[in-house]
Length: 344
Image (cartoon, rainbow, N blue to C red; front, top):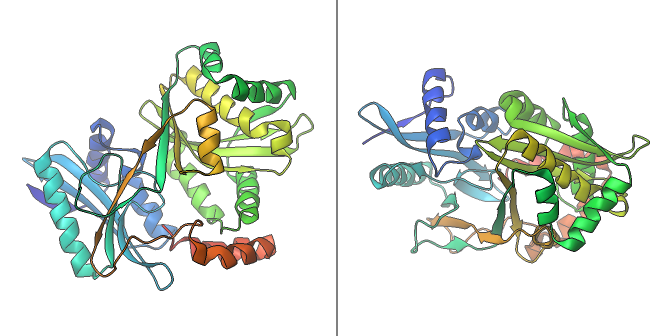
């Protein structure tokens, strides 16, 4: 088994990489080769996209980036800004060879830890972050059957949005989405990613990345979601809402419209993405009839005693969150990308 690195400008091997990713059951949208350019160009992180090759055929891939920050630590992560990551391989030999090379690389880079964002567990002997779960559910082939599959109380909220004559539109750019997204994260006291990141996602992934925006009958912006499409799955990934969206059930209507449109498009699985256990988003997704499935984020620690807790639940960020909420949004949108790039 030979381990190689995907060069950023190697279009031929990038095509081979993606052919493998679309065929490998363990792979996800976040294993696609285009993330290498996004992580380098938008966030300026060095990338290490490893692949295992045998007899000229790719047998496994491991996309990683080196995220180094005085505030948030020094790590080699598969993958930053992704809910899923780690090794995707056809066999154990390829997986082990990729892991061995990742360990060697982590020591060479002198990182504090190596992180794999696995769906399935790989290492019972590595510390595991059990903060997150994911929610995935089949999309039925009939639109009305999907409506009836939503639990009664949540279905009533969807019908409320429909009765309010809300309108959903697929946007060609990220302008309206970013306005809602940036305002939403600012209210929660967290920095926003740069608008250039979302523009890049839409440009790089084409039809596999889409913005759906909900407006009131008078055109008022209410809610928006940026989703990824991978094989026969849809993954609503980034979202934002106006403060008036709750009263009008715009958030509920938005996800129903995404489900409805996905059904009509022939998509077979709705991936609600990850949430922190016990939070509002966790409860919201359960209300739709989705059951939580554990994610196995595994860490190999080199220069630290415990798993890093770079998330808003960490009490040490409480004062920062309160101060960020009071910051003018223009300043927050300018400063935010410099902070969030190091959160991964």
